[in-house]
Length: 260
Image (cartoon, rainbow, N blue to C red):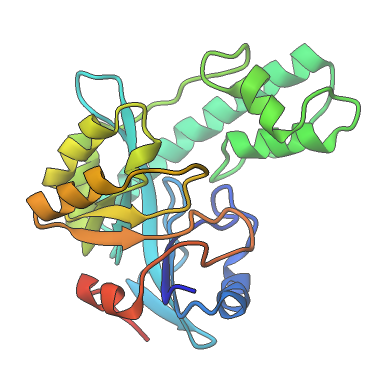
C-alpha cells in the first residue's frame, strides 16, 4: 500500500466519505497521508495540512480548466492550499454555476423519465449525484453507467455544459494558493500529448493513477524528466477504498508538503 494517497474525494463534492470518516478509511488501507481534492471546492479548514487521529490530511482541490483555443478540458490538482481571496472567489463562481447546471440537468432527467429524483442541489453537486439517483430508481431502465452513456454524458439529451476557467487562470490562482499544482491523470484525456505539453507550466504531474486499462507511462515519465517536474499520485477515490494508487514515503517527502 502507498504511504500517501493524494487524490481523494469526499461528500463535499461527489465522494461517499465524510471528512470525519477519512482517518478510518486511511488506516484500513494502511495510508498515512491523504490529500482531499474535492472538485472545485475547498475544505472546511484553512490550514494546508491537519492531523486527524494519526492521519495527515492535506488540504487540496481538483479544478477543471480549459486549454485556450482547443476546447480541451483538463484537471489540475492543487496541494497544500492556503485559501486566497482569488481562489475563494473563483470557487464560489464555479459552485454557483454548478448549482444552476445541476438544476437544469435534474429538471431535464425528471421531465424525460417522468420521475422525481428527490435530489437537493447544493454545494459540490455534480453529475455523479444524478447518476446515483437514477441508479437507485428500479423503475428507470438505466444504471449508473447507463445514465452517463445515454442521458447525462457529453452530447446526451440531458447534458448541460458548465462554465470552466481557462488553464492560465486556474494555474495562476492555484499557484498563488497552493504549494504544488499538478496535472491530474494525464492519460485519461483524448489528447494526452497536448495535456502533457501544458504540464511544463506546472509543478508536477500525476504519475501514479489507477487507470481502468493498461497504459504506457513512458510519455508521463518523459514529461517529468524533460521539465524537471515532481510526480504525484493517488487513487481518485470516490468511495471508501483508499490506497489503490499513491506515493511511497520517500516520493511524498520529495514534494516538500507537510507530514504528520
